[in-house]
Image (cartoon, rainbow, N blue to C red; front, side, top):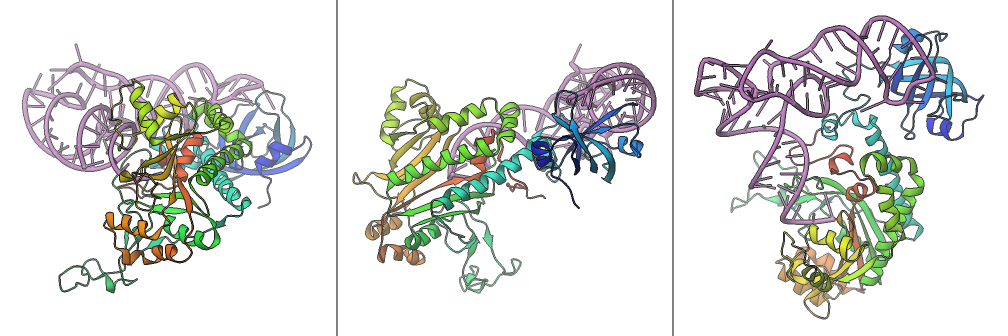
Length: 461
RNA sequence: UCCGGCGUAGCUCAAUGGUAGAGUAGGUGACUGUUAAUCACUUGGUUGCUGGUUCGAGCCCAGCCGCCGGAGCCA
């Protein structure tokens, strides 16, 4: 089907030009003498206005259509005499491609994100979700651009895995065994040696360890792919399937890592502001008031760096009555994280060097022997957006840490080998793609930034 | 998983234990360079499910199901 994208027509169409557009009706107002149809084809936020005049051959058929019907329109562009749009189409031919039943769940106005989740197959037709999926696609491209421009290698880390990484969470098991009658060992345990891979297998919870693998040869790598958590956590910020971005850099320490995280954050925002201007404008007006100011503020600020120990002191001295305790050695709660960057530093903040006890085994042990070289990047209104660390590259210390965590050294032999054969200081960080998307659009539920969200008890669509 | 809240028309929501309503969408008509158009009329209901209390339950009680918010876990 030969057609002009509405995006192109609206941005560079000139009066007098003949165009053919196809799209879905956003709204149709009609009367005896004149009518207006707004068509949207998803190529941009705005719709194009098509004039419906009584002289139109199949005017009755066209006027009978309702929001949601798909149409093919050929006509001549002209300057619009009314406010609201610069340009409009005076059609010579209008064809109905597909009619729309009035039972369509997506209508002009007045519905909720909760309801739209039940009709996830139709919700990209709405302004909000349409804009969201354009921004999501653009942000994905921007992520790849950032790393590509800096010479990073994109690592396609495995989705099926037999290691449980940091024990980051409950894993989805993958098996080809007959679960009604699985093979048993003598002690009656299921015999996974008979399973497809000869051992127990799951969906990955993180690509980090494999990222470290490739960084130990190619020095600058990143992963960007799906991860899976079988945690029964039912909140607006958790999904069972989500995408993570995890760069890993060799010959690097915590300072290098922090610098990369700040540069990366600003790069994403700067590019979104210029490449998704219209869609972000919508989010600013209708989803989160002040969104654009928030993003510009991040862009213009020098991020603060604060020791965990100093952060705890500052929280305790703030006089604020927190719901959760602020003792040294405890994790920072969301209320603490927000207070730090909203009230203490008043800008995005890296809190660094957390207590060893509350962090995973792979983080680099500092000389004080009680903290590890890691950071959480906190931003106003959300809290943690990025978490990262310098990795422990000293074999003996790493082994000791793994034993503390009761890990089986044998199954991580490959990971330890990276420390045996030319080990180098390296560091990396991770961020959830959906949470980043929520931050830059103001959307408040992760189910509304994923095409077909998977959450406990629900994998429809 | 824990705590709290909510399930009423396609959608968004009202309704002291006493005849189930509005807006919007849909339909019909009028009118208009309209833009979430406007105006008039109009279709539309097993009040989430099961049981209980009561002369009488959308409303009170119990259980279940679903959704939402917060917490924990985390990204």
